[in-house]
Image (cartoon, rainbow, N blue to C red; front, side):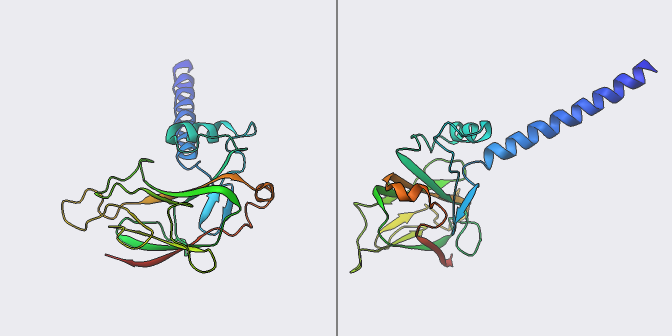
Length: 201
């Protein structure tokens, strides 16, 4: 009788442990910003502040991408395009943006492992001081396998059978450094770059 009870108790504890660890792992890996959405971009308004929960802190520590205090930088991440489709290194995307109300900004490509994707051009991002502007001071950035377009960022996908990326998932991180105060109160409404699919190899 006691043995049967202990076996049941052990089974319940094992299930609880698996569910607890599994949910923690999922939240940490999905916790780079999903509390607030703006187009294709997501962010957690608490990242970099004292209000950040344990899972957000663990996600930041694991990925190492969002290191500055909230008062200095706001981070937006895109894992999908404007149509909600996951970003793929085999595809070309067009980002169209207007001037952002911030002292400085950058957009960087990261692999699914949260590291920069190696490419022959050693080009991993575009920023406020690197993009060519149009007559309205807006900009267009292309994220593509070779990044050969003007204002391009390569994802390193070659399309060959030996390519280790093989159309892998990737993400974009938009950093707003020292944004204007009004930005903080309107994270879901500020005009961020649109992100549309142009085509795939």
